[in-house]
Image (cartoon, rainbow, N blue to C red; front, side, top):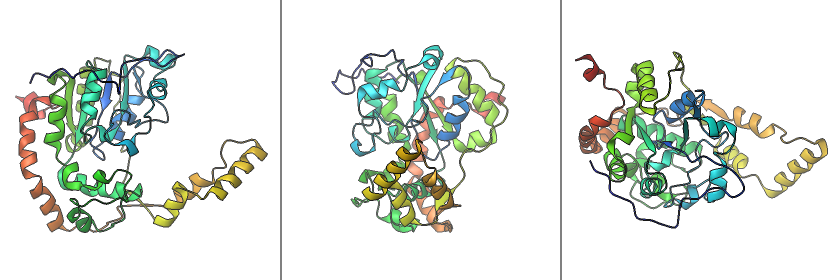
Length: 321
């Protein structure tokens, strides 16, 4: 497929961070969320030839259509993430913002600014994706309906509980073929690769090697691919809400203590978050009929994905023939 040229635009635009030397990313893990993106990010971040910004895994700079979910909207601050000696010496400079795939503007914005960038898209079985995604929305306090079927049925309704209401449209969030098509319209196919969580789980070393080869970096000998994230949930939504947005008087009190003792952090919030964390999904029961309904809804989308088989990172069947 021939990518079309993206017209010039003021935002985002090409420029260097003033007063600093910064690399621009040449590799993006664009999502989908809860499809192994954090694991891939973690493994690659430990590679000597790869640089990812520390403490800013998901800058979400290019999803301009989701203003309330952009952690680095300022251009200069975004570019500063890629400054420093490690970034300067790395062959691959990347970031991993999982809403770039769902965003309707991120693909064109990235292509306009970085037309040579490589794009990794991670996918998953629809029902498993929706369940995990819904659970993450609950954890983030972007969702207040714990029953997955009820939340699924309200996909088409505008709800303001989320920072970006469209994030609660589960039926749109799982339309992967449509989302991939946006990237194919602005990037050549050799700059896009698709990796499914199910396949990576079965053959992690093979997929990892294929990823390194595609990125044109050396094998670092990694053979351990331990899970990075396990299903978790907050014990109390009220506690999560308090920790996420504490009252002003609490902030003033904590800041006063930090100044008094000359420390940057008391560690109380971290311990409280850990204590409030429980294993497993908030919606522990996943009825088979709900999974069947979700998979059925996305059946046409899944069939459309077959057109993108040539973008798969590594195909075991093709390699064995």
